[in-house]
Image (cartoon, rainbow over all chains, first blue to last red; front, side, top):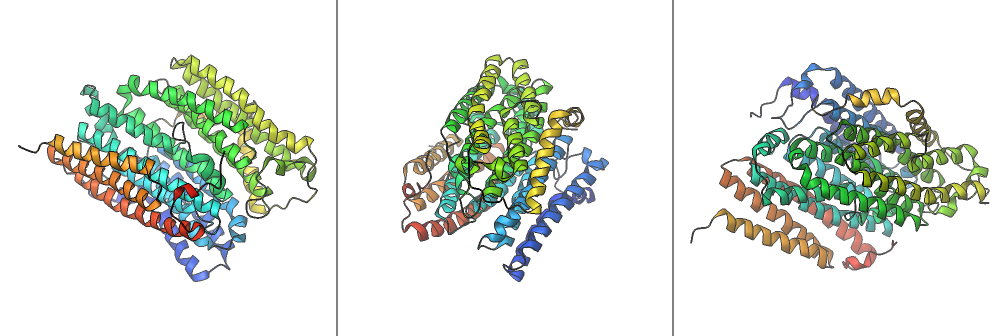
Amino acid sequence: MTFAFHASDWLLLAPELFLTAMGLLLLGLSVALGKTKEDFLAFLATVSVGITGALVAFVATRPERATPILGGAFVVDNFALFFKALVLLSLALTVLASARYVGAAPYPGGEYYALLLFSGVGMLFMASGNNLISIYVALELMALSSYVLAGYFKAEPKSTEAALKYFILGAFSSGVLLYGLSLVYGAGGVMGLPELAKLLASASRSNLLMLGILLILAGLLFKIAAVPFHVWTPDVYEGSPTPVTAFFSVGPKVAAYAILARIFYVAFAKFHADWGFVVALVSAATMVLGNVAALLQSNVKRMLAYSSIANAGYALLGVLGFRTEWGLWGILIYLLAYTFMNFGAFTLIILLESKGYAGESVSDFNGLAKRSMPAAVVMLLFLLSLAGIPPTAGFIGKYYLFTAAMKAGYAWLAILAVVMSAVSLFYYFRIAAAMFFTEGSPAKLKSSYALSAVIAVCAVGTLVIGVVPQPFLEVLKSCVLGR
Amino acid sequence: MTITINHYLIVSFLLFSIGFLGVLVRRNFLTILMSIELMLNAVNLNLIAFSRRLSDLTGQVFSIFVITIAAGEAAIGLALTISFFRQKKTLDVEEAHTMQG
């Protein structure tokens, strides 16, 4: 294993390097331009994410990507490319959805966009991480930027509180994850995932190794907000600025699934019987607690936080079903659908928010159909998709995940998931009922081009994947690990 | 008595446990920050002990990464301390209870 830099390394790292450079540029421009030119900074951030996307598309066509680079720590297979595209999609949506919100806030916007891009760089590296060290460093890059973003409204007690809770529990879980990594290193003596897999194939089951795997699992379950590591989610989602919440609910989660899938499919596949049982229990608890707690909420951001906890439970079914191809397909299609529908729902909250945290309770959705019929119909579409009703993207995702669970021999879990999806209808329909059957304020809804564009993209994505899933599935089925 | 790898692992485990419990039990934010540092340093000790025993440098390289990231984490933690103290005039994390449910 050598650590020399080649021309092909620079080529394959181009998207990450470019995004880092743009983040630094935004940081500098923010100081130079001050509060006045924030629309320009938002525009620049959008363009940088777009160009990074083009670079990822370019990297996808290069033959050099067949071999991992940086001593095997960075791999650009179809799986990584899929997650990079998804991360960049959520990043672009976040930047667009933030423009108005951040422009109205009395804090420098350049820092905000720079932190978003740095967090994006971390997620891009996570998608490609093939070595425990690079995965950990990328994870921390994403997490440290996220802590600051959560506390971006630093004069608001709620925002500071969200950042504080996110930081304490995030750092704590990183510590647990790291301890697990150190134990696995001690058992194997290697850090690369393929080397680890090769070594473990002949290794016997030792307590040291099992404890290490369990701690790594616990650390990663925290990042995707699964029970019992979910306690931070409602507070952080409620307290953070809404565009940041929307971002947290898709970007970091998607990236965490990327490494969860890669570590457990590639390195720890052999001990599936040991960790599979734990994951099944966690998945069941997550689905039940997320859906039941969501029933009791009156704040929509909090309700969607619990809904996203429940969704983490569904997606874990895909991790369980990894031995058939359905597991991986399920995770990929579900995360794609989830990005569109969840981000869309959060963008509707941003649209309703007039000032500060107002506009977040269920009663603020009262009479939305009278104020703006398109907004109400689109929100209904997102809610139907989150509940998994055909013909929406959410249905296709759940269909694949539940099938994966059945095929992996977890029929009881699939049945529980279906029951819990039915429960989720109750709280999603509370919002729907408020929109269509309740009288509300007659004030006109003020939108902006950027917000309308985000909502349109999310709505089209949710609907198209639901109605004509075939082309998407064809693409996803080629996104297997290591190709 | 010779010092074997087990001694290092036990010390590291104790350090980690102290940090782990500290985060869960303590209420002062600065103490929680120190407990998190203890957890990370327990990991470093583990990595270096394993690195020595396996005659493989990767573990030591990893521990340098961990030290660097811990520094970044401490910077953010201290920034949050100031921001929290300005609002609440205390560092007691139990005071962070605006949101509930």
